[in-house]
Length: 224
Image 1 (cartoon, rainbow, N blue to C red):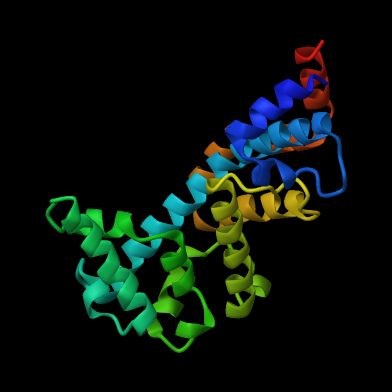
Image 2 (tube, rainbow, N blue to C red; image 1 turned 135 degrees about the vertical axis):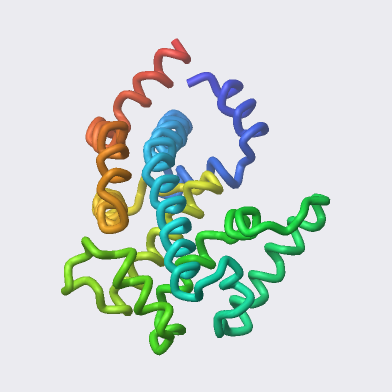
């Protein structure tokens, strides 16, 4: 490989970012191939993560509106200080943009971490959590509805989502295929139509099965 080509890319991408793909003393060619492969894996996970986050957000919102009988459930439910701070920060961001506080804007501003925190042991005694699990996760097997299990599953999805969003290395995760399968399963728990749609466009299995070889060939061809 042309060392100048790699050094130029290293300046653009940063040494620390590319070094993550050379921890086993891989050569520059392999590091670039891994970097490209990682991008494709992240790209293939974007769609299911998007569908999961939007579906979870909107179904929880709908349930909490029904549970409280009003749209401002974030102001009336007995959340802990951590959740209240997140609600305050969400409103603050909207106001900083010079926009009016509306239900839709506030709900859209909440992070995935806010939504998944509702399905944790922190709120295991809260009636609204039981209401959500009963009404939003109807397709979830009874054996999986244990709150500790749901918390573990949703937390892994949150970490995956953040890693993909921040372009972090995920190709080395040994359970990546299992995490993808679990992600699709969670979408199915929430809504059949959403699951049907994502199943039609999901490309993860194809990218994951092909592996890194196509990217090694690509890098080699670019450097001939």
